[in-house]
Amino acid sequence: MHSFHLVSLGCAKNLVDSEMIIGGLAEAGWTYEESPEKAQVLMLNTCGFIQPAVEEAVDEILGLAEIKAQNPGQKLVVVGCLVQRYGNSLPAELPEVDLFVGTEGCHDMPARLAGLFENHGEQHAKVQLPDRFIMDSSMPRILTTPSFRAWFKITEGCDNRCSYCMIPSIRGDLRSRPIDDLVQEAVNLEQKGARELSLIAQDITAYGNDLDSESTLTNLLQRLLTDTAIPWFRLLYLYPSGITDRLLELMAANSRIVPYLDIPFQHVSTSVLHRMNRRYSTEDLYSLVERIRHYLPDVAIRTTFLVGFPGETEADVEQLMAFMRDVRLDHVGVFPYANEEGAPSQLFPDQVTEEDKIARRDAILTLQAELSAGIQQKYVGRKELVLVEGLSRETDLLLEGRTRFQAPDVDGCVYINDGEASPGELVEVLISEAQTYDLVGGIVR
Image (cartoon, rainbow, N blue to C red; front, side, top):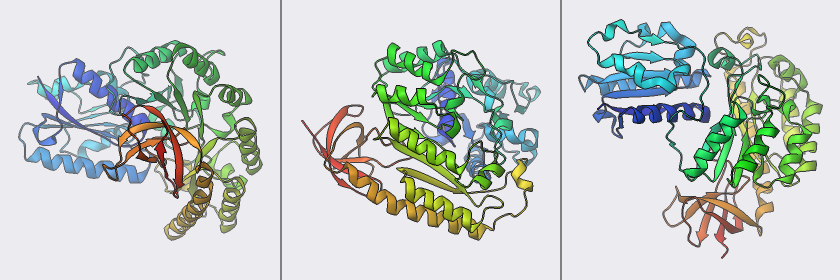
């Protein structure tokens, strides 16, 4: 019997891979050890998408290596995007690591770890970059989220070729899971108590482009609605030009698909978007927001902006901020652009200084805080369904949950100051107060 400790970095898509690693190891008889000092194998699932994530991964590896140094016989295994991106250069840089496994090895980890405990372990490749693979519903997976909500990964890879992004080279081209298999996984998750599934991919609007004409996001959603009774389906990471009227009509007609769309715009300036190799313009984004709100008047729209892209001017930033004032988005994340080794934009002229990137990010975040404080007021006096997460992270005196308009981990929450409920319950809450990002209210009985 072997034991392991796993740290998972990066996005929700990476977390699903970690859950498959845990599930596979558990099925093979491994036990999870909460304390890293007590585990036989220390594992780290890394992100390597952007340089800050690479730096975080290296820091975490060095921290685990210190633990390993104090525990003779312990093994250190690094998996995921960092390995897929940098591959065979890693052993020389990080000799403390016993095994490196790329992004495609999460489903058969027990076999890959077996060599660490054999006498001829040195015969096993220290860096393993398996062939491209896509998960299916038969593979064991143990949720690390609460049982009432789960990330639901519908594709791997990406066919978009944004000039700043390394995802296609790390994760490969688009690979969609069949609808029948996704429905089976949703049924499995429902049987385990799932009340909310968040559909995720690099771009969920691209779902099925590599399959047949019947494999579309709307057809998948219709099957999920028909074949399960899961109350909430949430759509994350939609490419702006991939959002169809048919999808919006389906959402408008089915309240179980929550009125929430996470659409990474990245910018609004046509000239910047063109250099980013994004397939839309300023006018397209104004039109998109208007079209979404035509079908879904009460929708919450989340986006992310990348500021300081090569060639971005102060006028481009002003245009972005004017757009924010005009359309009043519910949730906004802002990130300073960073050059990535191998990405085309690394070589673009007119690079923006770090100082200007940070100043622009801070100005946009300040504006969004002002806008959000006003937008949030519309909820005061309304009764909203809230999915209860449990005791508040702020104080044991309050419960905490989320409305349909708040996604897990990235948006604000609802602090419930009156009434009792269990985690995973959907309860009606009368909103009595709105803060900049959070809401406050009591359960209506």
